[in-house]
Image (cartoon, rainbow over all chains, first blue to last red):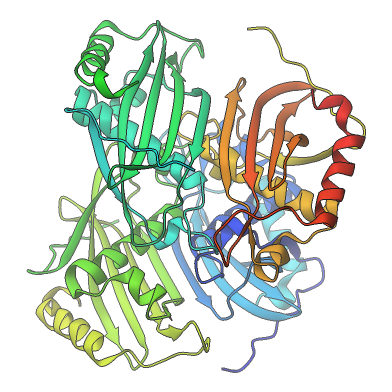
Length: 152
Length: 152
Length: 152
Length: 152
């Protein structure tokens, strides 16, 4: 399999995650559902640290939910206890109430896995999809434009 | 270390749990926080199947919470992928709003681990401890008496 | 959104899973990585109970691994604490060393989510893909044929 | 209940943990097994960042295991999504092959929970307890002495 290289575009939101004992299975590699938990944490941090929207407040005060409607993921190289991997978040698509996020997990510029996660913004009160509020939309759109080089 | 033997008293609530790949760590044994998750599942099943109180309804309709206030656990023998272990629930103590549960994890009558978990019944509305409702108390007390032989 | 109906084909491997307190998030619905953990458990049970191959032994004695190389999942209806959902496993595709599994999560014949999970059989010794052994291949192919009606 | 105050002794190993969506249950507070996972992560970081022993290498190259033999935990104040809690690690007792660690979870100098976790060092080859190697013992003893004020 040809190596899949990735260099995060300038300004992309990237966080490092140490692979812990607790992430790993009897084969010594990350048990895959833990990746999705890492991705959810990355998205939380991106809302707060990059967009300036506190994720917990969006849920508890704003009464918004962000359920995933579609997820796909290609696993290329397993990760082992003691390694540190980088997770980069990019925007694939921004709809009226939906947001498609690309997450690239990489180390030394080689891709370990790539995920595409589509989330819909909903009201926890009505349980229905709602348009992404203007301020948040602008923050996401701005992030998308300044990191667009690497989103392809 | 001397073997710790255990035969569940007649009528005790016991459930078998298969040790799955996902429970196990790089050393091939159960990663310990998973035991606490198994114990919580056992308690849920005990409420519904033994006491006749649907755990989900106690929370969602009754607006009760059951936070743990104290947990202690002795780990004696590790468990490995592919094994099936038995979890038995007994009552250690029943207070006004608190309940001390003993959970014995065993296989072939040999104890693998013993836990004592003290939970307090609280109102999710007031966030304060509340007395255990009479009907539930009677069901717990009845269970305690008919399984008392093995609780010591 | 139009309802997505599903009736498992005769002979399909289906297991019920109670949605527990521990599966659910502050919005009261299943936190999505738990679904993938349920799917992995379903696959383990299918190996042992349907194909007659003990999953733990394949790993510990056979020194085989079954890493996922691709996963995709459509989430249609959320599941809540106290519900019981059914998970059905069908075969999408069987390659030389790869196996594409479809998992349909449903209740009352209405689909809650659909996943496609592609796994590759590998040697834990060489860390390379290996052909699926003949006996196992025949068991999978036989299962595929007798459940093919509903796999489409 | 009287407030339980805690000020970490000078030099104590403390790490902050953000309470994430994924940590929380339908009551909006941390589902308790996640605390034990946080504690395990804290201990890993303490080995690497404070003692200078890479935890992953101790396991994968040193073939040491660190199973817990006893855990006890008092839960005093629940933690909610969006909060940041501090975890401080202190030494309670250092035996020939056993190590008793105290973990205090606190915020604004008020204790949220206190745990005592006793681990035994073992060989993954022989599955038997082994003496803690001299260099590691000295590093632990040194940490204990310089943080002893607050360990009581």
